[in-house]
Image 1 (cartoon, rainbow, N blue to C red):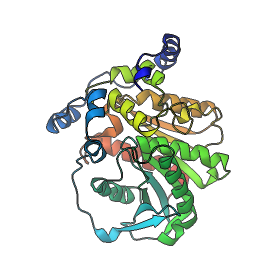
Image 2: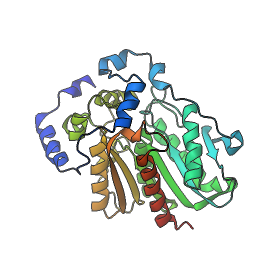
Image 3: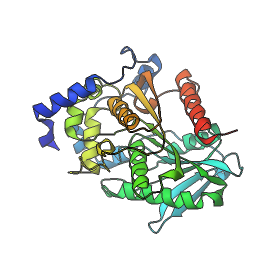
Length: 336
């Protein structure tokens, strides 16, 4: 990866022109709640060499606080011949609910840690759905394409078996945060190639890494504006991709924006944040989807960081996010 830190000037210049026309978002005023959150957790930037020198366990297992929820609201299963762990959340204990297949973030390095379970349980309540959370294999032990294979095979299994858990397989939504958003984009493209994309009614992409090539990271305006200081850094993005998919950066199953034909993909919700290095990736992927005739709803949250991390549950922006997603889901799924 080091050799990519000095990028071919011509390529960078071309990409810089492309990204200079990206959608505007905010006026570079960090939300005070987020500034307080970063101060509270003692956030500090780490350079790429520092990340490389850390024990991988320190990155793999983030310290996410545990929030209790009723254990009878979740089932823990393993699916496919690879025994992929999946958590099934149904706090409403109802039948014929929409199905959300959720793919977590973590830079392709962190697994589905217990601290994320409460938010998944809450999503099932908020969106009145059954949430299937996929604990796909992660790097460095399992490099690309392990995460893609697990994610896609789990999608196919859930699409066939969600009815056994009360889910309506005619109303399947794929939802992903960060690395999980990347996997959702890849799954939708693979499903199209296999002629099963009709099973996906909506894809929700929050903090999408669409182009993991180093030349994109060096040319993108949002990568430069938000390289340091806002939790998700350019160094972290470099570290994640070199750990997950060394030498595969131009593979469309690593950088899904590189797929030439994006027509006939499921409609997409794309969530961006002003202080996210990945902001322009989301803008550009949304633009390319629209040009291919795909319906896109997108929203950029001014003053916020990657995946709206750090917002309290009752924050105005959190309510806006949930209301936005619910409105689109109702339109697409015709929920009553």
